[in-house]
Image (cartoon, rainbow, N blue to C red; front, side, top):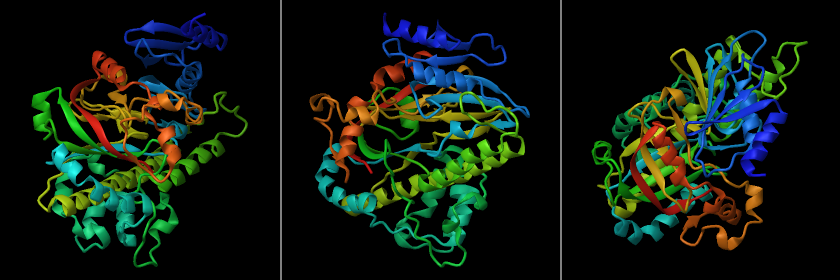
Amino acid sequence: MSNIHRVFAALAREGLHISKAPHGYRLRRVGRDDVPDAELLLPPEFALEAKALAQLADFAGVHHPNGGRVCRVCATPDFHAGHLVPVGAVVATTCDLVVPQAIGTDINCGMRLHVTDLEVGEFLAGKDALIEKLRGDILLGTRDVPMTPQAMAALFERGCMGWLETQAHGCGGSVRHSDLSQLWRELDRVYDNGSLVGAVGEAPEALVDPTRGWLRDPGLATLGGGNHFLEFQVVEEILDPAQAFAWGVRRGQVALMIHTGSRAVGQHVGVKWIDRARRRWPIGVRHPEGGIFALHGRDAADYVTAVHTAANYAFLNRLLLAELVRRRLREIHGEGLEAPLVFDVPHNIVLREGDHYIHRKGATPAHRDQPVLIPGSMGTSSYLARGLGNPQWLSSASHGAGRALRRFDMARHDPAALGLSDVECVTLRPERLIEEAPAAYKPIGPVVDIQVDAGIVAKVARLRPLLTFKG
């Protein structure tokens, strides 16, 4: 029996019916007209994963005894099983219902892309000096980003705008080298200006302690582990010249791509609210079979505020990390070096869009004419694309290629087949090279192509990795 028929049979035993659909599959829970169908975008050569599909069906059936409902469910082609909720899932709910487990703890682990006016030869000539400087900043903790309690409170409550307003009164550490007027201008190239409505009460108490003169948060301007990275790339191919020109992107440029999120703040918020959703479930009402607990009403609104508090931190985390790199590049290549921001976009976040809350778990917004960043792996291309605002797919695109193999399985993989021969990765953890090797990920080409075919995104440029940093 083929893989696809085995998956179909396994799902049928669980009361799930799967059928072919344009660009993928449609999943339906038999006999449950109150549960919306789930649509999966998937290249035909990719294998179906029964566990991930069952999780998607459970996700589609999320409810709360006091009201609210799931309105639409879809999945991007980097779709794979997660903990209870699959990665690559996008869910629209009514605005009185949210699902904390749909976002998890890595809140707003997003992407940020800068382009420089360096050519590859210039970059390679200064590469060794750059590695030496960034090794300390990124991996050894020698960066210096002190914050006043007032600045941290403003960050949590009003995001990057709130933080920048406090910098007008002076800032310390490496931030004093930053061009604050440039940072203000670049907020137009950050999703929602990197400034959501948060609440200082949702932040870890140690990060808003008003009795301290300065706070040195160990999480700000850091990568974290897992699939997070900082990578220098070269723009290898322009696929939409007019759009690339409008965004300041040209062939041969060295670019900087950053993938990181809210670090310990996201962990703090995510764990707290996942636990609260379980504890606030009405007494005497049977727990959901899939183990996914929703929040309703005022609890739902408070959760969104908490998520946005952590998301604000993630936006600033990426901004500060990019500032460290810009400063180091200018120390090596001259103060006149330009490294403007192309865009900064979130994943793992819930946002109100129209009459719905849109939950994106391992997916990214792809609204009309919005830049979309879709990374491959440290050995394969990444893509800059333009969103097309496709309502069928909830104006969402994949946040990357998606894992093909679990980290545990990579340790047993044939070393010759890892795809590391042309990879240059700087890390203090040798196991990262194995866990995050190109072979761990799906091929990026089909992932992007099927999203183009489905009218989700249009390609703008393809970028090839030159040097990767992993936490």
